[in-house]
Structures are given as C-alpha cells and as structure tokens.
Image 1 (spheres, one colour):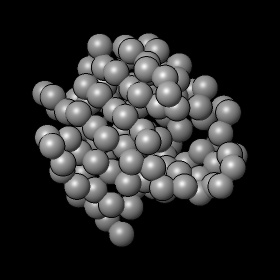
Image 2: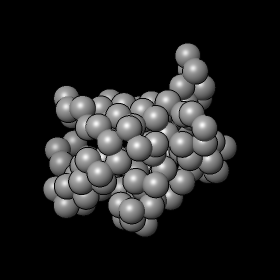
Image 3: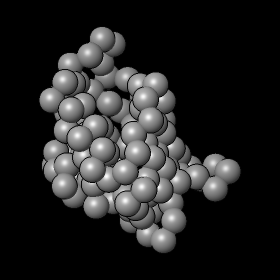
Length: 108
C-alpha cells in the first residue's frame, strides 16, 4: 500500500529503508529533537548517532502502514521489525515539520 507522506517524512522512511544514516540526518533541521525510548536526542549529529546505534542494536526495519495529520503534526503508524521482544510492533512516529524539514520526532 502506498501512503501519501510529506516530503521530509517520506525521505526519512526511505533513508530508514536503505539504512542510510547520513540521508536520514539530512531530513532534520540542525537543532531538531527526537524522543525515543525515554530519551531526548538533540541536534543532527546526535540524531545520526542515535539512529546508527539503534540500527546496530535492533537491526530494525520500519514500514509506514498509515498516516494522518493531528494537531499540526504528521502521525505515521509504522510496523517496526527487528531484534527485540514482541517484534514486529506498531509504533507511532509523530513528526513536527517546518520549512521542508523535520524539527521534532517522537516515537512511541
């Protein structure tokens, strides 16, 4: 199924699919914030490290299965598969966008 996603969000998931941490990092503004697993990651360099570490730890893939706009954010339900208990799981990826880039991402 094809889901219409805003360009920076589509680019994020394309980079995830290719396991391309550099392309993923380019989706974010310089001072972007990611919230994942109870942590807050700030800035592009830290986001790049976060994604590389998560990929090494979980060997994960993410497949967007649904998307909606909610309260000014783009909410994508992703099927996340990898080396972790109860895989696969469906997680919300809540994107804040500004100026064609991601300013915030919360995964829950």
